[in-house]
Length: 107
Image 1 (cartoon, rainbow, N blue to C red):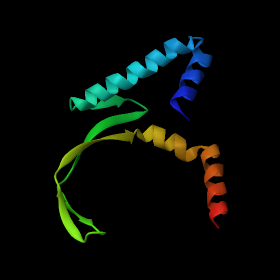
Image 2: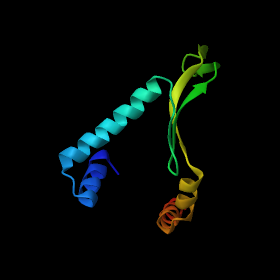
Image 3: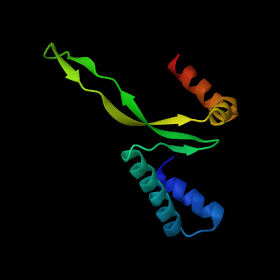
């Protein structure tokens, strides 16, 4: 589902104009993005958390040049779904049928 599809569905379900729905969605993303840039996590009970995650310093290999390089520790954005959200996805019949179709297509 794309952002445009989300905006269209919000508009259809709430009766709000698409432009207003788009502005709300864009503002939501800006708030989440700005909070994470400031090092703050964003929590939504029953949905999940947008968190800033620390990646440790590590040594990586450039296979084509056969050299090692150091990647310093850094912070990345991540999403951690809530347990109730994960359970709903796991129990979803639609997801189960989609997974069965994909595995059958690979075989």
